[in-house]
Amino acid sequence: MILSNTCKYGVRATIYLALNRNKKQKTGIKRISEDLNIPTPFLGKILQNLARHKILSSTKGPHGGFGLGMNPEEIKLMDIVKIIDGEDIFKTCLISLKSCSTKEHEKSPCPLHKKFSPIRDQIIELFNNQTIAELAEDIESNENLEI
Image 1 (cartoon, one colour):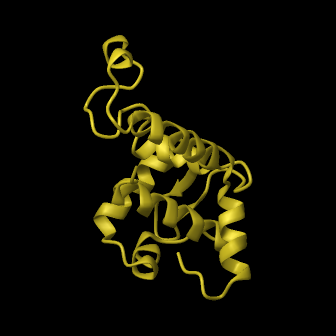
Image 2 (cartoon, helix red, strand yellow):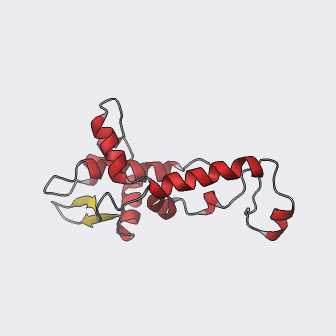
Image 3 (cartoon, helix red, strand yellow):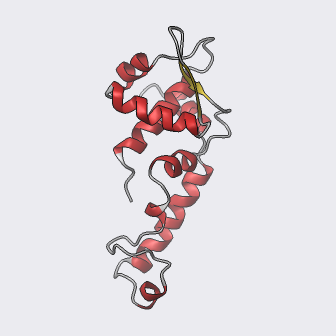
């Protein structure tokens, strides 16, 4: 199970904003784009999507930009994943195109189903428990980590 690049960019940008949340003003899209090396138009769409879902806040104008829309302790990694990639990655079988929960699929699951199911459960638990605040703290405390 791999997150899309779009989702990874959304997570990275949210962590970036958490790391810079003590500034009085919002952070401009160009600054975020340059610091994270993400194309500005693409990043803009991602951040607007997260702002629509209240993960981020957005202000227009010359002193506008983006900031966190909620406390970073309240933002779970799963929140961002659901908004950007959706929940299909947690429901679709690893090598089949069908959902693991369909009746016909339960009768004849893919060969990896039983092996992958506990791993999927661990990933779901990790994403549900991991906060943006914790990820930002890990980066702040380890100078070798980057976003």
